[in-house]
Image (cartoon, rainbow, N blue to C red; front, side, top):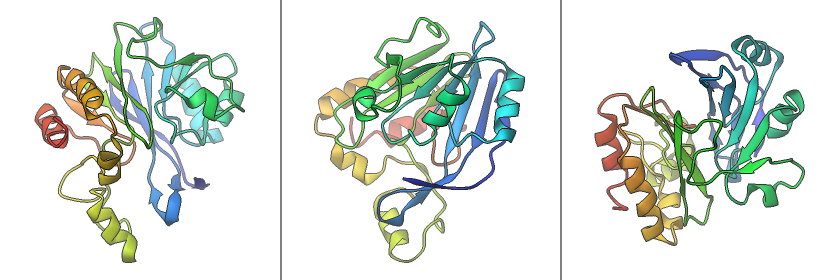
Amino acid sequence: MDAEPDSSTLQWMSDGIWTASGDVVTAVAGFHYPTRMMVIRLEDDRLWVWSPVALDEALQREIDALGEVAHIVAPNSLHHLALADWQFAYPAAQLHGAPGMAAQLSDLKFDRELTDSADPAWAGEIDQVVVRGNRITTEVVFFHRASGTVIFTDLIQHLPDDWYSGWRRWVARWDRMTGPEPAVPGKFRLAFRDRKLARAAIDRILSWPVTTVLFAHGEPVRDNAHAFLKRAFAWLR
């Protein structure tokens, strides 16, 4: 993917939680996507940064005003463009990657691989589960207990109907990237080679008391979030 310059500023979401919109990134065949990162202040006042977007001076000043960046979290192998810049800016922070990322991105120094168990640094505050069995990427989904926010990356997407034009617009509709509500894109549905394994992960996600669904490409779902998740994954379950 190639990144196009854009602005990023932190937006307050809830107590101790901020988001920032980042660059629009271009992927295969010219499909471009909006991006979003999330920052959570842990109980020790240090920062947990999920899916970081491009780091510019303005964003770094805002981040530094919040506290110490202690954990940089790469939730799947598709979200890695900004990791090197963040690791350079915050060398003391630990880089946590989804399964397989360390081998794929040998130029980065990963400190820990994400598993189904929360790292001791955020255990009790943020739960997590690895959604395995997908040919495109292995994604780690998180749940922030205090806010009731479940955090997806690419497994749920929702772009405006006019985000693409021409043939890409029709492909996006077929792929469920656009539509009446957020959905699991068709390419990810087809890429699940082990649906039983994926169902186990989704069942665990559905056991969480979710009130908000946040994802990288689209606006969060805040109304009837748990019912929405059941609809989004009904095809799998």
